[in-house]
Length: 293
Ligand code: A3P
Image (cartoon, protein in one colour):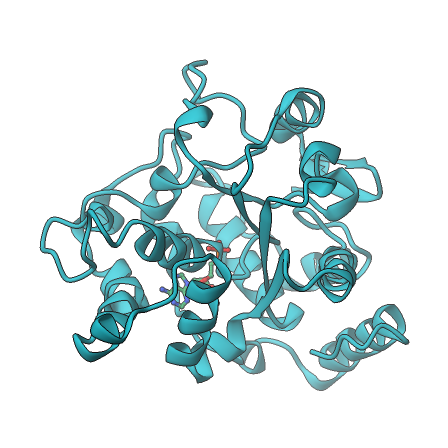
């Protein structure tokens, strides 16, 4: 994997993304009220995309409707990635039609047109780096060509700790948006995977409010919060036929984005020494920032 990563503006980018990154840095013009969902890979991007899409589009598409778009399309197909500027066949997606974007761009690489635009909103999703690492290790092994040997966890772990991972170092990625959210909490919301699992209703209400579409008393009474959560739950999304057998236009199978969807799976993979190394890195990187994971 490392051989396909390039260091740019302090972070490791997959080679195939770089043209799109440069292109959106130079040309992307946000519109007022655009919303950007930002995360490092394996933080729960797919989940956040599904929830944000369901919240913002719940007027034409009630989350309890049997033909909701999420029942036939993977969340990645409904919310375009900002930094991928073309499909595998060379076509450009119609970005102008969508006002909800998702991106893995670290803050230093976020187009200035977005970073400086006070009318745009950013939702950052953070997750415990230990779980991100374990999730990423399964993900990259799952994507390797048939017959290729599985990468060793020890080697991948060492590289991850040194920051060499998709859009890594993940600690710096988190810190960039954490600092931004502290400067301007009205424009940048900092969400955590763990808190979304622990108190989903509260976090989804908070997100709806931040996005400017709070639940009405009528919706609360009608169980719409629960409907959104059910539709976007791990069981709900991963059980859909489209996510079991479908593929993205980039060729990846939808099912690779759903594995376990739990907090703390790292305990099944990392020994004490590995966990301590992660803790030391977090302590060093986050010192003085107020960010605690
Ligand atoms: P695990 O590998 O730990 O299970 P991303 O979407 O950023 O690629 O992140 C993928 C991770 O989010 C995977 O974590 C996946 O299982 C989990 N995930 C996907 N959908 C989810 C959902 N609806 N609820 C909770 N976790 C989910």
